[in-house]
Image 1: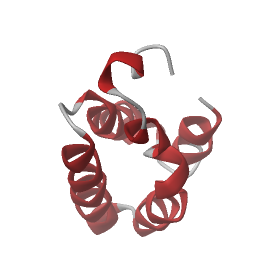
Image 2: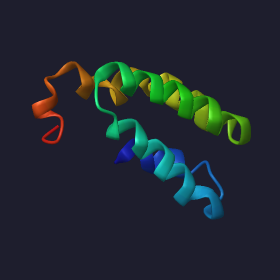
Image 3: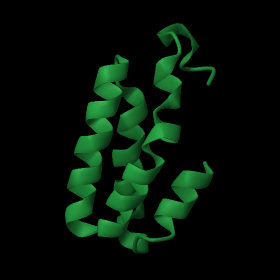
Image 4: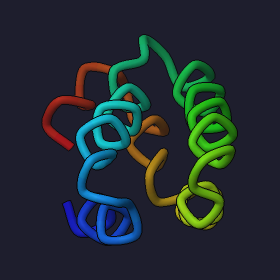
Length: 78
């Protein structure tokens, strides 16, 4: 929640919904490998228009993807 708020503060209001939706796709992946790949892909795509967002995603990657180290049955609770 706090990370998303910080990211959206760096994005123009008109693009915030799109950026938030793109970042949420990271958490909707079926396995840990896909989570990491999605984060990289989203960071690159958003980085074309918002380089600061790309940098924030890359720096926060360990924290953002930490849930993927747990069994998938626990992901919704984390």
